[in-house]
Image (tube, rainbow, N blue to C red; front, top):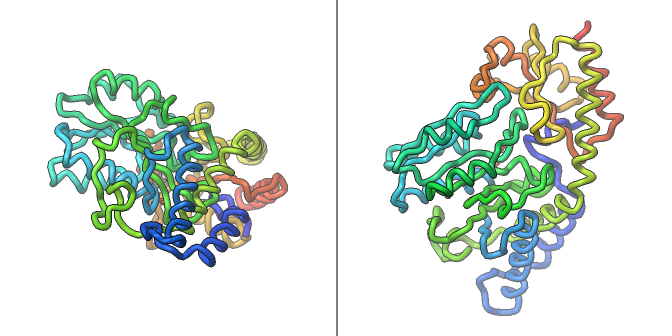
Amino acid sequence: MIYFDHSATTPVHPDVLDLMNSIQKGVYGNPSSIHKLGRKAKSVVENARKQVAKSIGAAPNQIIFTSGGTEANNQVFWSRINQDKKHVISDTIEHPAVLNALSQIAIFGIDHDLVTVNEKGCVSITDLESAITENTGLISIMLANNEVGTMQPLKEITELAHEKNILVHTDAVQCLGKMPIDVNNLGVDFLSLSAHKFYGPKGIGILYFKNKESLSALMIGGGQESGLRAGTENIGSIAGMGLAAELATDELGNHITELKSFESSFKSELLSFSPNAIFNGDPENKLPGLVSVSFPGYRSDILLAKLDRVGMAVSSGSACGAGEVKPSGVLSAMGVDDKTNISTLRFSFGASNTSEQVDLLLSELKTILTD
Ligand SMILES: Cc1ncc(COP(=O)(O)O)c(C=O)c1O
């Protein structure tokens, strides 16, 4: 199988896998134990904390380990219950781990408004400003979108929010290893990451926070993670994520260059035999290597199945279920009509790809689209 679905998840980096295996085998102490084996486990966790913190310009004590991006996002929203200002602003193209979480906590008094995006998938600062009320305590806007890759103007958003004493969360799950991330430069108060998007293991992520006071625990128990996330630490995965974060930032420049080159050759070649193809999102301000394309006149589930049959994994830009394709909420929010919407595929290139593989993909697409 040739894999072009790195935005869904990434294969684990071989060095990360080796490290995790050796830790699972050799480091079995509980990080909370005082004896030597416990101290060894604790040092593994703390080393990983430093690695992940460094990758986003944070201090190690500003990071807690979570089970992934979904939990990190949830923790920020549920924490609002203990804060005075309970109104949250987000936008219409966030991941379900933001949109569904916000919908479900409404019954606990956390109300929210969603600002719309333009046809490129970008939020407007003016719209955000208009949505602010006296009760707004948090703005949550993703750093870049998972379906179309559009990057949001986070720095401007934090400047606006902080003038009005509003905190800012960003879901940066798609971003580590594909763009530089510096929490101080962005100015955000919270940031979520997930290891499986940057060649680390699944089921582990982090939540960065500027100040501990603005956060409450979701998992309550033994007091681990400074009381902000109880439960015995997932040491192997934490160590794996630490190394994955370090590798992702060490290789950032080269990786971006490679992704951009895959993307530009894919796009230009595709247009040569499929001139009606429409690229969704912002052509400039986007994550490299993530390409959302609509093929008017085709159905995404059929295209996806044809590619699957010849051993190529891509993602549908829309949700498929029980034989029908539903339009993607992200694309609809960007103004894409339903017919075009359900003809959309997402190709996301990554470290496991070569330019020969991209050529093979193009040749299969040519057969499928011109037959
Ligand atoms: C933007 C975004 N946020 C959150 C998540 C959820 O992260 P996790 O799988 O670690 O819970 C994803 C994963 O697809 C994502 O792309």
